[in-house]
Amino acid sequence: MYRADFDIPDEEAPRATEEEPVIDFESDGIDVRGEAEANHCSSDFFSDDQTRRIDNAELDNILDELVDLVNGRDLDGLSELLASDAEAGFLGRSSRNGVVDGFNDLFLRYPTLIVTRGDLGSDPIVAVWIFDREADRFDPFGYMTFEMSDKEEGLLQRVEYVDELPDTEDLVVEVPEHSELPEWEDWSELDED
Image (cartoon, rainbow, N blue to C red):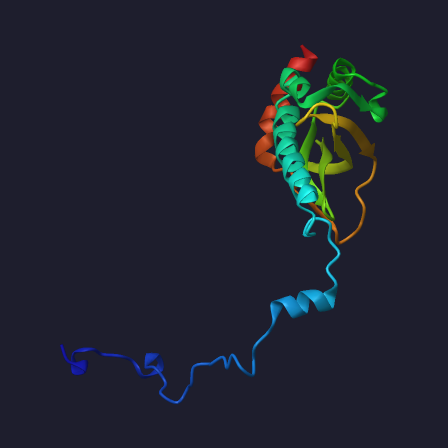
């Protein structure tokens, strides 16, 4: 085929005068390590402390599971994530069964309660939301922080509740979606029966 076989309009023809940008690595180079050292990154999450990174990863995994269990109202599964001497001061409970009973009470008082994952700086958190039916939106209801058990590996020892999400750039949370609402409507109907 020859170029004459194609009918290319003038406005679509490539311009021969435009040059492609070229990066000169010697004059335009950036030393990432130098930039990071200059910024004095102090995040615990990115620290060289291997133990801290592993703890955060383990807690992240447990909190992902906890979110699914709380949102699914799976109290037996929640019990399996808690140490035998688990504490939740905001629920007034200090045992595994007590904390589970406290969560059950929360579900009865707030049938549209839902939790999502989040991070506050380098610390993993669980954001708490309540669906406002009149306004047709999820309202933030605070967040929970967690500590791992020293005695029982892979289990949660302490659950704390803070009643307001902070207004800071360090906060990153997932916002619940409306697609999760039918599940809550089913729960509400069961609670009313």
